[in-house]
Image (tube, rainbow, N blue to C red; front, side, top):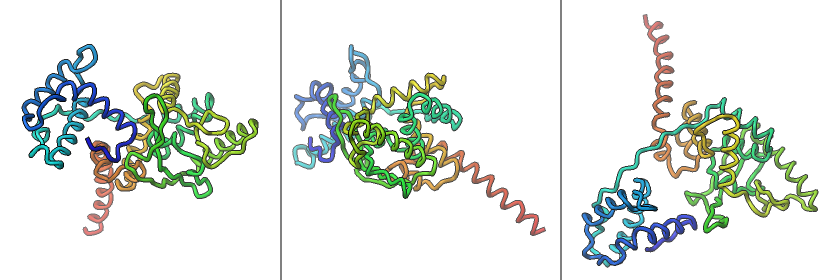
Length: 312
């Protein structure tokens, strides 16, 4: 299958889906005789017993397998190996939209307070994530040259992912960089973090460099934090504050829902989150846009009522 532009993590995950599910079941099938009905039957078997210890696979996993198969067969059409893509006529299981449960401002305040007491470095990370809505991979990939604290802006251009147990630096999920403005509180938090890292480096005979990772356990900033370790540390903060069902990724939802609820333009929110277009933001946060629309209705009512009084 042609796969230009795949990130290392996506390539690894795709390889896994091929080796575990697609090749054992369909690898020996003659392409010209593969039908949509056969593929749908294959999806049905995956749903019943396609996983570890013959447990059924989740609809989301089957949809990912479907995506790999459809792309592969689509490439076969382009190369003239088959005349039509049978996967295009299949019916993979639907995946329900997960509930979005961002932390409340009060919960976020408690998490930050706890982080400042236990780990100022983690507090800086949480503060930056909650202020920008950046992905976990993007925040751990930040280098000091990406932060312009004088102009209060951060450039998000890369991500860090784990591939075969090691860290790999790649471009962002949308393959593009973006500049995100920072508020004064976030700048102050990052300034304090920078001072702490400079002092730590100096104790080890180093001087903070622009290529160093902003979040690193190394004195020379040469290795970023492991993404999964950050998630575990965040969960421990939540557990100590008795805050359930809040993940690190929910800070991203916090940014989106708070901004949309305050009436910020969807395109602005999409740009801050790093979505390719505003349609993605609309699809994910439609429920919260309904709440914003209620506020818009109330605002219009406040404008219309006085105008009626003046016309009487």
